[in-house]
Image (cartoon, rainbow, N blue to C red; front, top):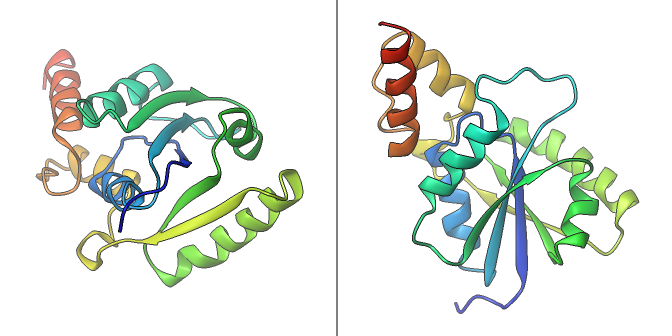
Length: 166
């Protein structure tokens, strides 16, 4: 299938970006001409990595793919999507438990921007368990995370570990 010329917006905290996230972008590139990865902050949420580092890791992960643009986002994602001329929000579904949250989020976004579509992509079964939280926990427990995060994340985590003298 040939991708359309439309823009899809994939928003998340990406704290850190995982192979689950990159898989969703790869699938979305089959549908959209361009993907904007929007690194956002959720109100009241504490982050392991600051926003600048999360943006940098996403940029390094997608370096060389001119159809993927990484931006920092603030405010309501649906409003940002419209201002960036995106025709759809991209969301990933790992398991059935994700569906309820995503269903409510899509309904809320329709109140904000009624014409904005949401497109869901299912994770591969072998990545369905992957989350940013799990990647952080595994790293802190000295478990190899090379099968669940892209190389720039491992490089950043290793740099932090060395800086901490571990």
